[in-house]
Amino acid sequence: MKKTVINILKQFVCIVLCLIVVVPFYMVLVNSFKTKNEAARMNLSLPKEWLFSNYLVVIKEGNLLQGFANSFLYAFVSAAAGVIICAMAAFVINRRKTKRNRRIYYFILCGFFFPVNFVTLLRIYNFIGIANTRLGMIIAFISGMIPFCIFTISNFVSSIPVEIDEAAVIDGASPLILFFRIIMPLMMPVLITTFLLQFMGVWSDFMTPLYLSANSKMWPMNLAVYNFFGKMNSYWQYVFADIILTCLPVIILYFIGQKYIISGLTSGSVKM
Amino acid sequence: MHKEKVYPGYFLILPVVLYIVFFLLPCLMGIGYSLTDWNVRSFQGVNFVGLDNYIEIFTSNRNYAQGIINTLKFTVISNIIKITSALFLAVMLQKEIKGRNLYRSVLYIPSVLPFMIIGLIFKSILNYNTGLLNRTLDFLHLGFLKQQWLSDLDVVWKAIYGVDAWRGIGYVMTIFLAGLNTIPVSYYEAAEIDGANFFQKLRYVTLPMLTGAITINLVFGITYGLKVFDIVYVLTNGGPGHATEVLTTYSYTLFANGKYGMATALNTILFVITALIGIGVVRYMSKMEVQQ
Image (cartoon, rainbow over all chains, first blue to last red; front, side, top):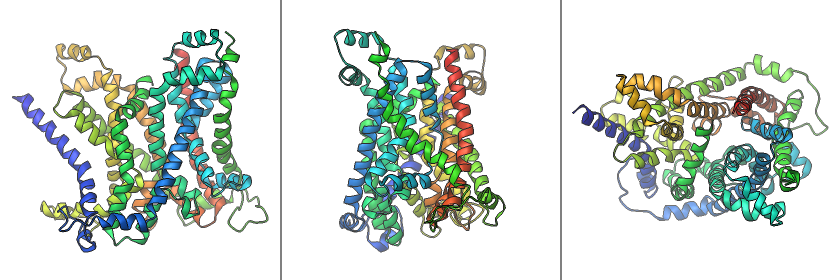
């Protein structure tokens, strides 16, 4: 008897909490199809008339296609490049545990805590001539993700038996062939996890583009939406449509890669 | 097997160089530039001004010092809220209850969304006249609880903590759940045989076994809290007045106004605080590794 009461209570708490998470999305979704006056009331009722055209307006006025292309470029290139170079480094650091490599490892790990100083970073960018370029943006994202990537991937390397390396070397594999042909396929689970986490991280990052892109052509979706909101803050139906379009890619990615994302988050907690 | 040949040092070069040049160097340059009058008009180079920027931060009437205090306050309070509630949720969701996996997935979703988007959604929800929150309170005949969520000095921080928890609890909970899964059921059975009640089991079995998960949540939470920017910038932009300014929002405003020297001085203060914590944690980790 006591058990059923507790279970009902638990279910109640869970459902209320899930509603608190879901209702805001539901509100955003239904209001994104409404007319201006209807949307301004922001209630939960279904639209009297479904205005799918709101989305077309947003895509055109909010410069969303450009934003989407930028976001995708930044997220995909930085996450892919960052994960590969960090995988190579983590492999060597973990296999050759010399004093120097240990020092490098902890030296890089410290960076996890530091804030990026964008003001002086811009100064460096001006000096080498990549200020206000997409390359500059990508480099900033990669440099920022190095501590996390090295930490996560290097934990995984220990689980790959050294005998595999030895066998490959006896067969005459060079370091590059050993790494790309043999080790990298074995690392795939952790590489996918790290890639997904970093992809979503870059997609959501707001501060980096805010500092580094003076030119609106370089804006990722995030920043495009924020500026759109600044211009259109009485047109909630457009703002809501904009929000849906920006969230959709990461939500889809989350449901596809959920298994990898959760395992990546949780591997650290068991290790520490 | 020649280790130097099989695991060549050049595999390390790219990340190490990128990390030093584009991450660490700006931090260190910031220390130098924080001692200058660098601003948008310094075409001829910058002048050394000693500790003037820091003196202005701690004595001027712009109240930058309050920004530092707000940052620390946010870090402590937001973490206490998220970690305690996430711990109870995790304990609740760990046991067999119907729909457990669905609840876990749903509660995690906010953590993958951009903060900027969450800020905009909550700007509409917390709107005094038309926002969902105040309307729901009206509907439930709880009108006396209605607030000017984002413009009343007494509640604006509570609103920020609330939105922050809305996004972060799922993440913290997921890490706790992973930690809970590593605790053997036999420990609880033994405690039950000894007649332990729910709170005794929590105190003497669960918490000690969760040290790893608690540590990682604290480390992530503290670094996140000290560097917080997006949520404050989008929700209140430091307002009303300067009531909710934190280090990063002040620094961005100074940067946007062309006062680069002052901006880097604030960044440097943040750098020193995080560096002290970070180096402490990394030292602890390296010691733990030696012991293993």
